[in-house]
Image 1 (cartoon, rainbow, N blue to C red):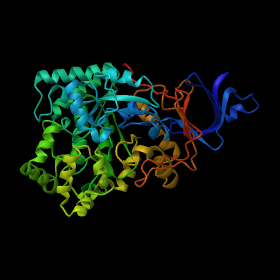
Image 2: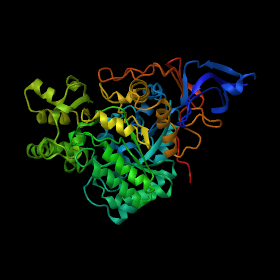
Image 3: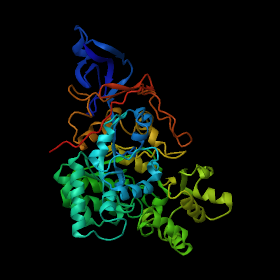
Image 4: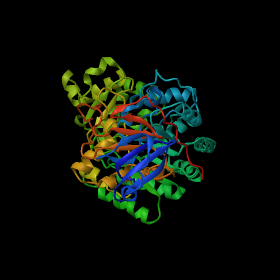
Length: 536
């Protein structure tokens, strides 16, 4: 007798086609039988050791988070309820060019300091790996959901070149190519970049193209956080399209937004650019989160020259009055490259998290509001916060536009990604609410996508990008990564007031055939493992 039968489910199978009613049988971690209602008439229905009555519920493939920042969260708390409760069964780590493998001791410490605002410093994590393969092996000890990994280009550059703004020597470029190849051989699915973050932003196009050729040779994809989402956004998108075309590499555009006032209403221009490339044969996909504000670290807004040399050099520059004034001018007058070429508007920058508990009083306030409390300027407040929190402060940027969000999520290559930073007292609600928000708000309430379209965006499309032949669809023989949700009630509980409130309407989530969410509650199962690149 099989393990489980999910009876009388409305199956939205991930293909984008119409739903159907069926019994779905799971055994040994895979879907072994799908008996549609019409075929079951007059026949004995499948039986199993356990049955779930799915009357009124939709059964879909598990959701794939194409842009996650759970690199340490999965190790710190393998339970990972933030994502499991949303129906996420696989997430892609190593994003934005900065993560924790491959490293040596020096680089690991530098990266930990640089992205404390994303993942915490990691005092509660045993960093017992150095290579990509060793990190993936660490995940294989047991986590709630599956995880894939991108080789982070900024980390590779820090390891080989350091944090200096200069071109790599031929020997350094050869070593970076070898490190990328090793990461892919060890199971990474591609390469990421953070081209508004140091040190990745110091790489010229020729260097990135050389690395992308390595990625292409392994059948992986390039996932850039490109050089601007603001004043130079369209040019930055075009740069990535041209670069990957020259390298012959697949391209996946991370959190593909058009932000800041200069881009209001300009999503159709981006989509036309992508459609021209697709029609010419390019392999391009993208992901977005279904919200208007962004989220990053306060230090990320600084100009690139201020980040040269690494975190300690940044702090030294901030401590020097003359250099700090130059930073202020770039931020407030010129528009720093860290702030996407747009002069910062402090009233849009909300402090969402600090690492020093003594600074907690500013969380939830914009930098301008925090400055008004003490009677100083916004820059003086931001500078004091950066120094006191040692660059660990996380912020929301309220700079997006709803019409752009909706237009981009309709695109034929769109997938879902939370870009979820789990750190801070008031994190962005996308970390806890992205996938139910798509289903509740943008499907049921707004009708921007049909249910069948939306599920395909969140399941089969990302599985195809990751080259996973047995995930992303409800099919016989596929892995039983499945979600049961109520289309009438599914919604994100998380909002900007209570960003960690769990979603509603998702009573069951299975990873590899095991319940991680059962009757709406997290079980103690840890069936997730690393999902490694499928060899060509």
